[in-house]
Length: 215
Image: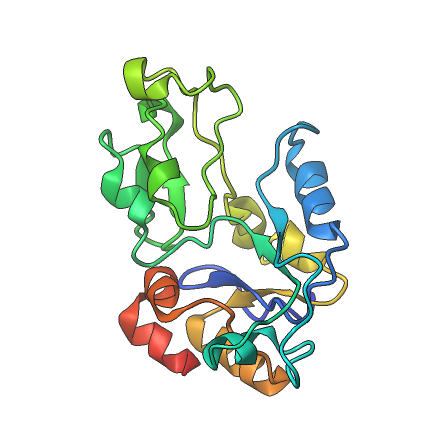
């Protein structure tokens, strides 16, 4: 497994080290190739925050530390995907239980046969993970024809045979971390990288107890 993949299977999470991301798009390509995602759809993307802006003095390449001190991190590339949150807002708002937390793995799964395309999950997710490739120009709020929701699956099939998610395995800079919350926290600390996300987001992703490991 790649260095960014510390463990796989039950209890693992996926999380970005934004200070390692170079916006190469390798994760996007590996996901599309592995799962035959159409060229105009994606399950992971790189969001550029504060494009063209310089970081506050003394915080170049230290986005997480800058954020924690209330300073500007400057231009930052953030791999955005489903983080399979411990307190997943999408699961809470789904009216048909199409979205569930899998009992064994803890990953957020989509049961396609129950999805009515209401797009409530899209409104609830702070990270923009839910995608609706077959949506009908926003009419889902009226008649529920937003199409079936699609998102990162955490490469469950790969993990079942001991492999890491494709995006993490092929990331050139190990900017996508996979492991238990403790392993991810320890790796970020070892690298001297911050989390970039605020406390509310960390509590959503890891749960309040596990989020404390990142402090």
